[in-house]
Length: 352
Image (tube, rainbow, N blue to C red):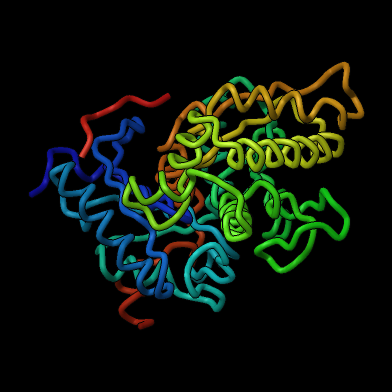
């Protein structure tokens, strides 16, 4: 099983809190095949890695290739990323993932090709900059609204990573001594806008007697979590609790993004992520409106745009990692099958 020209194919995996999206792209970044698997809600890093391998193999099967013939596979992961070691730690929106886990070497060993790891939000932002809604701009802020809230930065055409921890916009404080965030701190934007935090609040409210169809919709859809699709359906039905919690999320996003804009003064803000993509332009407009009272330069606000690449933005950004790592060729930034051993479908769619 090997398609013609398979040497120019790359893989991309977007690891999210509720779903794993795996794709195969050609050298023009056309998506040849994709596969979506649910992210395990129990277990630990090894269980998540196993599901990532299954998703990537399914995408490869749909594309008619073996994973081992791919030029490489890029992975966008939450948590603290050690690119040199291919390790991920402190991925708190994933089950049991506090300590460092050798994700790159593990995947490389199972899939038979090199693996490059990057921050999930930054690689999604990179994809929007190169291929999506960010193409007209030299600088931008990407805000990915999903299980958590993450940020990615492009400044003067280059990703800004700081010392490795840049872009944690979800942990900007929007309420002093406010709600407890999944990170353990109080008042973070993510405590109000992250899907995991909103679900926890919804469960507490339901237990106290608040009527809501959120969990009924969840069960009808065969889910064990309040996914973006569940929230969207509840909003469509005008569920009062869903409307209230999403409204609070929008206000928190508006305050936090405006504060970041007051510091950065970038020309564009791109809203993506699971909830951002699912709720789309109507809620991007609401976020834009919520930002306005908090902007210092309120006569010259940034363009606030929905992500242009949809659900595949994160996986496309991950696939782009293979190109960027090949160009830079850092000696230890990729995990290869050999080093891992030593250390331990959709129809083609043009994008961009």
